[in-house]
Length: 391
Image 1: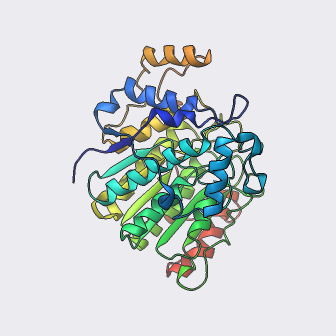
Image 2 (image 1 turned 45 degrees about the horizontal axis):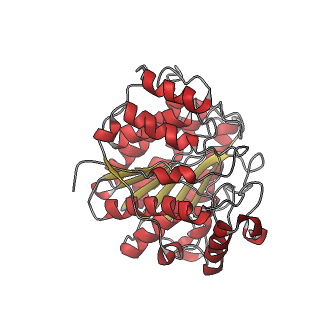
Image 3 (image 1 turned 90 degrees about the horizontal axis):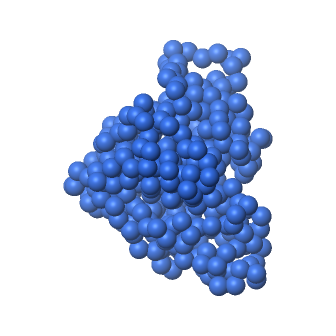
């Protein structure tokens, strides 16, 4: 196995553009890659442009009629069929939508293939993580579900145990739905409580299908306002124990940056520094519990497109490359100049929010009156006994 990580990148992904008024501004992708280059991380990884996902690959998850509807809307956006979630406020149709969505999907599938075949220990596609798309519909800014397609391709290649960990502020509903009845895939999602936030799913009682699949879906529904300490406590109270038990052959993680306190679309209060610690934890868990440390890391949501997303995902690339970026480092002025040229905003000056997050271990006990602890306990009670673990 090569010791160098892969970074999946194709400038074409910046054409995933729902329009000027849409919160999912593709400048976040361009600025992330620019920051990766400013730190020289592109020299620490192998930068690869994967092939767009073809029809047979897309149909590993998506229905034939839905792919046809995306193709049709891509060529004639004004005629998009809203029955498929296309041409809506969340998912406006745009020219070339199929092609760029297939490119992003192909990047994640290519990352999974390379890691499975031992061509790289880790692979990152920060343009991916579009976890809301369903087999037959677009949803939540997502056209094709690249995370599900990557996992489905791993199963097609012979993987028997794939773990998916999603720390986006929104529930990873599309991935959970795709593998609800498949015990080979363990999906774990930490997200803001569904009572407060789209898509309204991800309750702790959602634990997977019947039979062997029961207990294969794990959901931690966090109270609005959860900050660094609670977010890290919840992650470490649930994820490591489940991965140690499941022993995945590949770990796929989704790192939506919209948990951040500056994000305009949600209500958690997590810092960049805590996001970096979870990225590091996923890296460590891959080396501890996954054969050959196979790790595929994806992006996801994130709508503070200048201050947060580029820094968070540049940390992710550095961690995967075994060349982590010093949080205290001064961001190169060349990148800040590019930020101003593209957005007329002033970019952040350092790779940190100035926080030093800490958290209490679940093993030290819990407070039954604390809302965060109640959320963690609800998940552990719902899932852990189904997996033969103590709640």
